[in-house]
Image 1 (cartoon, one colour):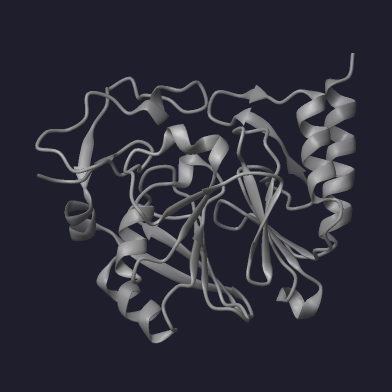
Image 2 (image 1 turned 60 degrees about the vertical axis):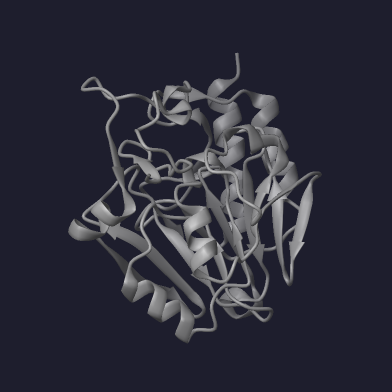
Length: 268
């Protein structure tokens, strides 16, 4: 029996004696199944050839990424906070070095996930950290492939995690969320956006899509809802899902002008 992991998207499944027939997350229009077909592995096998690389992004902010790249190639974040450490988004692998490092930092008080593409091995991370609660939005519960008591689906517009706030924006997925941490950046605040917003290559804008690999855009109503959801919060930095995709300053204005540019581009 093994917890099989989808090689394409990195999602870990419930224990079974054979690989799943298919990966529902990859078969959805927002992701893809490679032309070569669906392939499977497990965490032990990933750990034989990969490791988790930690990078300090700012005071109290560490990015974590599997190297060589695995699955979608995203980064997760360990965020040091006044109420304990929060893991934002997740990876398919938690290696021994990361277990030791997290334990030395006081473990995790919570795991918060932006959307199903980054569910990955969230249950495994929770179990390693004493059953840390995993916060996902209830609108996306159908995409969970490994149910567990540590999962805490929530409803509504916001969820407080100590001093941090998960904000439901929708768009990319119905329950797509961002995380606001007001104590970071010297008290000017930071926003962790996953794929709900995508920091652009020039780091001067963000953009919005229903499907990034398949280039399916969002409509005006969805983008406007995202803008209105984050508008009440102040943030200097924006941390995107992929390495280097960080807006270092003027975050609120970046989102405002990005939405304006996007809406203008798709207008009739």
